Image (tube, rainbow, N blue to C red; front, side):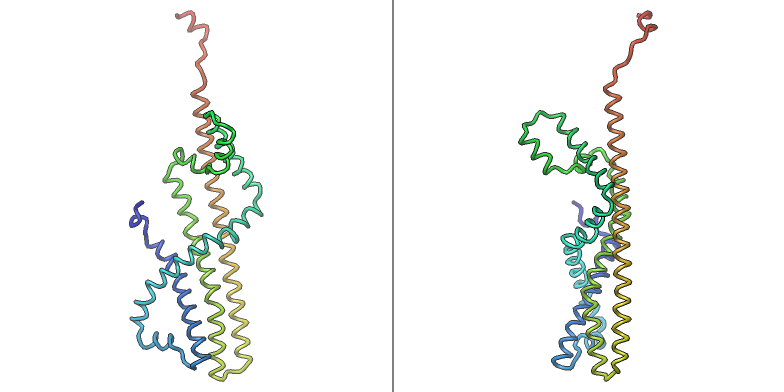
Length: 252
């Protein structure tokens, strides 16, 4: 695999920006603890005094945190928040996909004389989409994937990192306002506005990610159906024997 060739500016941005937000969240939590214990904000002081040093520190750590966020998303958030929602609300599409995958597997098994045990293992563990990759144009597969997945990953990464950073930011601002002896009304107003802003942004990111996954599934299943149909037509054409007409007989 060409790792350097697959690395792009878009891949960096979708990892770096959420990771930078997570890094800000870590800074908020560090300063919050320091304010409560030592009455001092080391991260804010460091950013004010050494902005270039902070930037050099932030770039690699943002990429690392973004990569960790992406790992957590693929293990937990995307299956639970995106895929499960799709399967619960679009059962007809999932049934169509299951029927297509079953047809592909049964077609492959029909060409082989396997024992029942081997056939059961094949049905349970083999991926039908992988069986069709040699028939699907790879450029079309990548086009469909790149049209939706980078945006979906960016949205879910942003949601996770924002959720991690938001409580620290709100708590830090409240403690900071308390040290500045701000009124209770100001702190409550800031808290309510912050919660409402986060709720609206989180809902928008979830809806956008679910919509991206929906369109990705529709496009990919359509591509597989079209490939499978074309392959079936070609097989049917190969099986048809030419019919000898009476004119051909007379010619012979």
